Amino acid sequence: MYDIVKSEENRKTVCFTESSDRISSHFRDIRKQITKNLEIPGFRPGKVPRSIIEKQYGNIIKAEVADIVRRELTSEMLEKEDWILDDNDPEGKIELPAEEKAYTFELTFSLYETPEPESIDGIRIELPSLDIETAVEDTIESFREKMVSFETVDRPSEEGDLVLLEAVPTGDSGEPQKFSIRIGESQIGTGFDELVLGAAAGTQFMARMDSDTGNDNPHPVHKFRITDIRHPVLPELNDEFAKKAADVDSVKDFRKKVEESVRNRYDQEMVYIKEREAIDSLLESNPFTPPVYMVDNLTQDYLERLGEEEPGQETIEATKELALKKVREFLVLRAVALKENIEITEEDINTDKNPEESAASVLDRLRNRKAVELILDRADIIEKEYRKGKDKDTSGEEPESSWHWISVQDNGTEPNEEIAKKEEQS
Image (cartoon, rainbow, N blue to C red; front, side):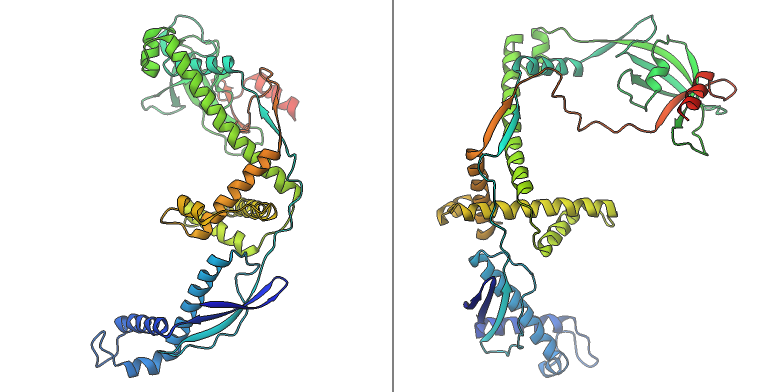
């Protein structure tokens, strides 16, 4: 099917040969496809004489056959040779094939070689320690919080209370909108919790949204009335609660089940953290630019998975950045595996391969996985000392908005303290 006829540094010239039977089969398939959709006066669909088709479409058919054969044979060759191409467009002048004859052509490929990776030994990885007692108690409290109930109280609202309200825009005679908020969760925007904190049922006030950046078209003023204050009541930690929460018979069994879950989740997270930190450290110490076509192809693949008809520029740039990182990750791990002579047997590939995968993709996956394992075996992994309250993850917190709620007087103006605050800020 192919022979490597010339090798110079990172360039390989390959001679491909396709059999006459396969060539003739491609000619028949393409000619049949053209005939099926061809409409010529005087001939029924699908019954146009071959001589007419050859006269009008002969060279088009040959070019299509040449393109199909080139793509098929190149793909088969790359599957076996385990090359990374520097450019997805090989050099070579391809003559057009002839039906019922073997077809031979040459292509020259430029290969990409990832720079030999450095700093693969002794990568320092810090793992957060597990305070199992605190983690178990926090998890149990989260269960209780999910099963919380609320009881009406006759007092001003406090942190954590559920406040029931009615709201209507000023000048609107329609039915008021009923809703509720939990003080401390900023459910409808910054500043609203402060407007209801310490207020009792029956309290009325007016408020609207305001922006620190200034706004020529301020949000409408709403009238609010607090209809009820409800205090959260957590369920007692008893056997009945254990049954409802985790379908176990006792609090002791519940704690045991929670502890197992916490440890399993911690172990899974540590596997991810170790791998991620090792790979990120490797990428940082080994800067290189991968082939452009690989990044472009993966970017396009990611965008198609998103399913957006017209993704915005920010989405495209973020997707391309992710694709660049994933391509660099693939190539640097591949380079580690080659440098360390990591071997993957045909038996390994056949055992791990599923019907949708090619042998080459399984080879890449298994080899890179072993490269990560090797790096972790040689890494300097330490556990950070647990300090309560110091390791809280704030990465998922929402950025503070410039919009916030402010109180408004009956005449529609802001209270004096709000005006004074703005003057002080300006």
